[in-house]
Image (cartoon, rainbow, N blue to C red; front, side):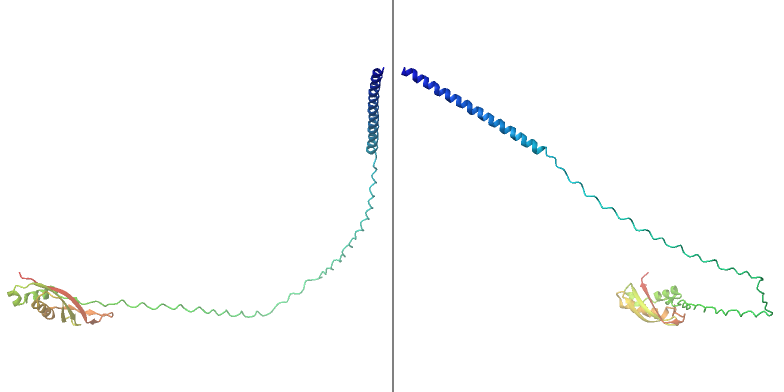
Length: 220
């Protein structure tokens, strides 16, 4: 008996717990369903609210433009009166004709100054030999006797002053032959036998000049 009572008591407790859990689940479902439906109604109310915008303000009417001022027309001057001469003016004639005016005096320009005349060409020239072959032979004929004996040969360079009358003077040796006998004989022969055409100055007058030459002494 006691064991049977204990089994019946455990089954009742279990049944009570199961029934309680079922009630709690039913209550949760009810509460959740009511909450969801309430939220949907609130959302629908919020989304379906019509917002009316206020109408835009009316623009004020533009004032009419001011009337344009028209300029008065310019005054028109009447045309000037035209005077028509009844007869042409009289022509006045001059009985006497005035004399013609004198011609203008034209002064010719001065003549250009002629350039100075060029100076006449210079006539200056140096002294030149005259009959050179003749007097050169005479100098060779006067071969110094001592030089002949000693068989001395050589060439002497000499320079002389030519006077206005064509004679040689003031002889000097410019190149020695190596023998004083030949050098002295060459200067003596030039001053004694040489003849020249005298030198001339720029105006063509005879003047003193200078002449140089070489004399060769050679034994045949």
